[in-house]
Image 1: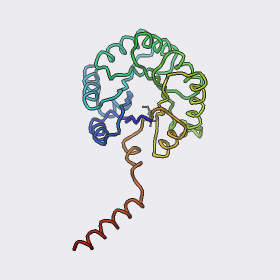
Image 2: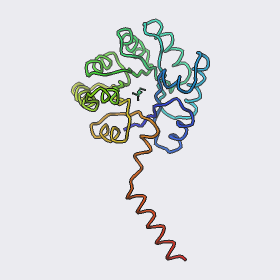
Image 3: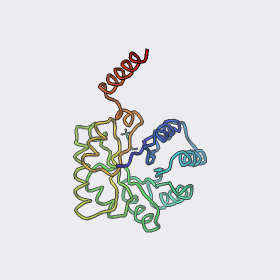
Image 4: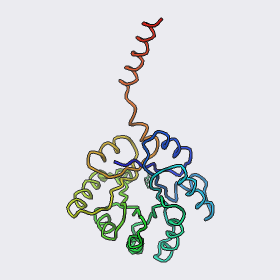
Amino acid sequence: MKFFIDTANLAQIKEAQDLGVLDGVTTNPSLMAKEGISGEENVLAHYRAICEIVDGDVSAEVISTDFEGMVREGEALAALDEKIVVKIPMVKDGVKALKYFSDKGIKTNCTLIFSAGQALLAAKAGATYVSPFIGRLDDISTDGLGLIESIRVIFDNYGFDTEILAASVRHPMHIIECAQIGADVMTGPLSAIEALLKHPLTDIGLAKFLADHAKANS
Ligand code: G3P
């Protein structure tokens, strides 16, 4: 299972990269705005900075919602670095853009997936990744993990190469359950990734080991 970090914060990306478990980064316009990044040149420079930190795929989202605009933006983003994955929203022109980029060998991530039908359509159009937003479904009392299960079955039935990128991950149980279901990738905040390493019995056990060692060596 690949681990992506869902942020545009360079310090957090570097921290996850230094941990040695990072396979890539996902961003979106809200995350870029949160870091105060605005203006085309600054946005492109920020994506270059992210690509310098990580080894894996970096999803960069288009703002356009029409086919021509998505193609123009996506090509500019893809030209930045071979790590760039063009992130495209699940709208009608977005499906056409997925097919366009797929035919050109440019990686894509179809975002804002909230149903199995949307995921199937994106896979048919040749998306490299589909991003079902599990946290946002949970927020409206709908089963986010159930959606991951449905997409897994559909993709396996037909041998789609499209990877399931579980997005809008909020906590460590989301990550664990996505791993059990067989999501190919999860993207979440640094806090959810770091929460995986914590267990009170680990802390208690380590304190005891160190105390016993200190006593024996005093
Ligand atoms: O990047 C897309 C997705 O992961 C957003 O997550 O927490 O804003 O629902 P969230």
